[in-house]
Length: 113
Image (cartoon, rainbow, N blue to C red; front, side, top):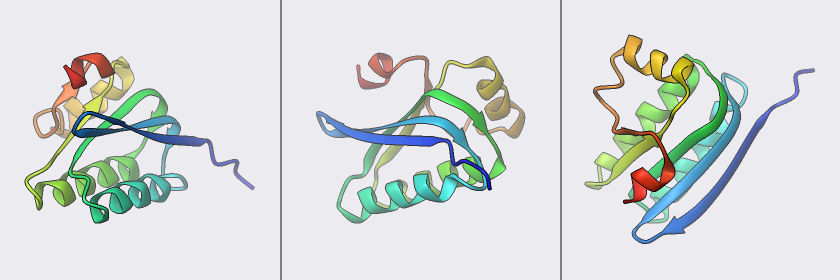
C-alpha cells in the first residue's frame, strides 16, 4: 500500500485563490488536485495561483492536471499561474514546452504582486 503524500490548502488573496501544494503530484495524488481545481472553478473562482514551492515530485499525470486546470479557467477568461522555484521541476516545464504555456513565478509574493 502506497502512502499518498500530498497536501493541499487554499487561501483567498484579493481576486485570486492560491492553492498551496506539497509533496508529490503523481498518478495517485493528482486526482485530489484536479478535484480541488474543478470545485473552485465550479464555484466561480477563475483566477488561480498554484504554489508548488513544497512539491517534491511531479509526473506527467500532474502536468496533465495543471494543463486541464488551465483550460478550465481559460474557458471563463481566467488565469492559472504557477509558483515554482525548484530547478528539477522547472526543467520538466522547459523540456515539455509548458514553460511557454504557464506563467511561472519564483515566489508566491511575485505571483500576487
